[in-house]
Length: 335
Ligand code: NAI
Ligand code: MG
Image (spheres, rainbow, N blue to C red):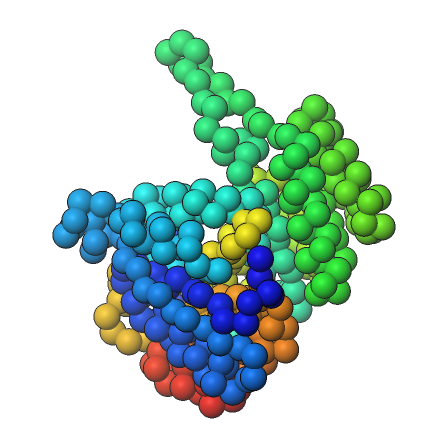
């Protein structure tokens, strides 16, 4: 488990395109943090994945990379191109990543649609309509089976409530139990059971109405616990409220390890130019620090990112002229 050994082994898998530019940036930040702070020590182990390695070897996720991730305390993944699904889905499975955590925080001075947004989506990542039970009954007649189990629902609820308590957020549980009475009814019952056990408070919201409310005024919300599809859609909606892809980080959390990845892809239109926004990847690093219970260091990294962006040192995607290296250096300097 995290927090017990002082030296943390981190698998680093840059992947393709700008993954190869932003993952070195977050590694640089984590190395600076480890240099400055007693008790924080990382061992980085690098692995390959994605289009590049598939071209050379025929497989997008070499077994040794999978084992590297399983053998590490946490992993940082950049992005893969055409082979993204061949890489990320098996990696999430390999660590039993049941929780997809997607913060949507607006930073000052980056033109967010809703500048006060501070949301964290905690999405069930293993079942719901993404469980893969789709059938064609007859030509033109198809069905999909939605799987909601008490076990997975309780697991995501527990994670969400504990995350909210640690970070001092209120909790909203998104559902559509008025229509999906059995499955989302099950989901809500599981949430209620866990809340009672933990003494946690929460409100529920119909996911469609919540989408509208989040656009109108996201400040009424904090952690949003969601079944799989609702979390997928609502977290992208919130991403739109806070601005560009270059700012969005995510975590895939399993029982014993976690994989952190920026939400963006390989950005082929700008790859190789040295202008990728490193903020999303660096915020993954902040989340990784917090995951290891280096809370103060994680907060420092977030603050350094915020200050750098607010000071106007921004890459072209945010309207600035700075390079990846310049933004990274400024963040490191502020630590
Ligand atoms: P994308 O996120 O790579 O790019 C979308 C737009 O946002 C582009 O204009 C890009 O330049 C910009 N952008 C993204 N991240 C940025 C950053 N850090 N700094 C500055 N600008 C940034 O999504 P797209 O174009 O749909 O996909 C490109 C490739 O990436 C595809 O091959 C796709 O399969 C893959 N992909 C991989 C993902 C993963 O590995 N998790 C996720 C999404 C896409
Ligand atoms: Mg999505």
